[in-house]
Length: 196
Image (tube, rainbow, N blue to C red):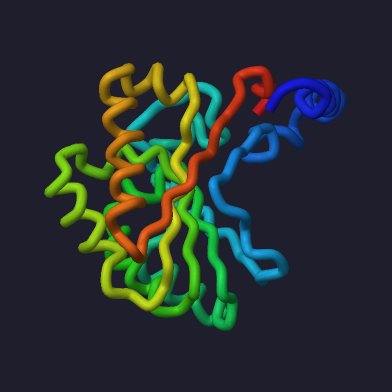
């Protein structure tokens, strides 16, 4: 994001910085458009994350142990029943110790599940990556979409080589697994705010 739009967001962030914490302060570029008008709920699954990014809205809470268990998610399904689309955020949802079972629960009840992730828990080795993704998302009626964070902060946390391998691996997974979509959440450091 450049030019007038970035300047406007920077001005708004200066006026109301807390509004721009979390996902609101990000410039997002998607390869595909979201479904218009679909009723959507957001599930903040866990604060757990293998990274310690200072910019993250979950920073400082990673060790709090705050997360929904499988039983909690099953109880919530009664309230979420009938929603076609669910967005899962965290910390890092894929790092949840019960994520495979939670994905199967959600995948049986919703048409599309979008998961915001840094993709660190996904193995880099192609064969292991495919088995890992298939064990969590394959064979379910839902379409899963992994929205992978791509920014200088995550690159710094992971290191250049690992970051590049992770991005390439997720791109390949999105191409080769028909039931998995991959989107990119591209963040611009100029939109970072303080106070969260």
